[in-house]
Each structure stands twice: as C-alpha cells, then as structure tokens.
Image (cartoon, rainbow, N blue to C red; front, side, top):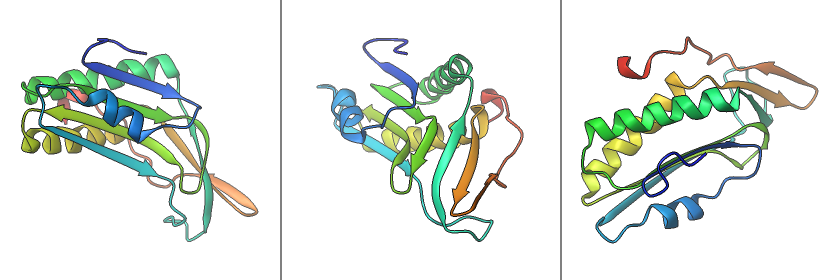
Length: 154
C-alpha cells in the first residue's frame, strides 16, 4: 500500500523484504541522510529455545492503516523528514531473514536517526502484529506480547 506515492510507503507482505530497495526509494535530492533499520530473525528467545523461524499474523488492512498513522505521527514530530517507508513481513520468516524495514530520509542525519528510532519503537508497540516463535519440535506465541497502544500515546 503506497499512501502518498512521493513520500510515504507502508507495506505488509508475505514476500521477502529488501532494505536496499527501501534505501534507494527513500533517497531524495534534497536529503543528505538516509537511515535504515532492519529487524531480523535471531536464534535466541526468552523461552530458551533455539529459534529456527518466526510466524507473523495480522489483518493486513488494519496493520497498514496503523503503519500509516505511525508515519503521520513521525511527520508531525520531525517536520523536515523526506521519504518514509515501513515494511513488515507476515507469514513464516526464516532465521536471518528480515522481518521489518524502516527507511527515513532527511536533510540532516539527526532527524533521520531520531525518526527511524521512533518509527521502529512505535511500530512494535502500536501495530497489531502477532509473533509465533518456532524451534525444532515446537512453537509458541512470543512471551514478549503486550497490549497494543495508541500511536499518540507514544
């Protein structure tokens, strides 16, 4: 889903994500900084199992609407940021694969870094996304679950 074709790009997909694609897309002639963040599947968990993959579930339309709300709030806080993209995987994501990518361009690096940090932190707290951890011989919903909060409360 591309809400503002020139500046905002939020997307939820079962297809692999590309940080390079988002970085290239976010690069703008009026912006001297592009910050990207990638969340990847790691092999450790609070359960003590060696994780082999994660499974994400959500309602895509609801998640994309909430992602757009998060981007809008970032824009209200950092008025000079340029392009903003947030992509999240759903379905099975294997060890080492990317689960979420954030890319922010800005005329100056401080705003890009701050906005990118805000975006990933807020996505984790405000977008309804459920994660199942999978290991050899078993699986469980993540113990890191929490209540979904309003974007404006972040």
